[in-house]
Length: 156
Image (cartoon, rainbow, N blue to C red; front, side, top):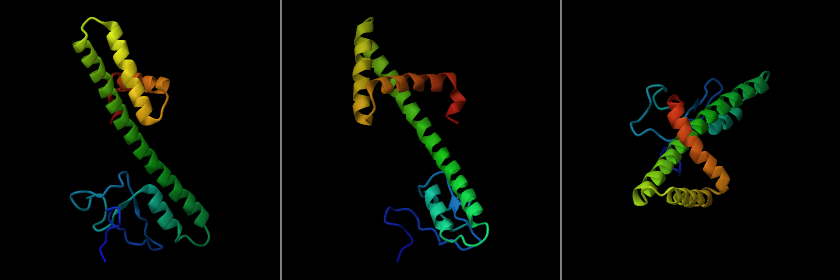
């Protein structure tokens, strides 16, 4: 039997009472083998998976406190993943916003109406593709530029 799960991620060894699985930022397997931050052979697990694996082995006095600490660690790790995904999404929205404006200005120089129309069309497409309302997408497009331009360290 191989050590890979059906989804292509590496299977982690079952935790014992003294070890904790590595709760990691990125649930994807690394291309270059083991990370120097982890002991050799130990896979990085999605935070909720590591929590559930360790939770099964808790027993005795203090188990609830330890479970709380583990859940808190998993929540922090999940929050980091969410923040990274939101930063990448904002960067993509900023690109779409700028590309749409540049394209409309190039195709219809001096026509503010054409630029507004192009942005409305793009906003409608994004709203449909992301199951969000047009006002929400419009706000997200504007915020993405502000976040990138006014707060360049936010991405980091």
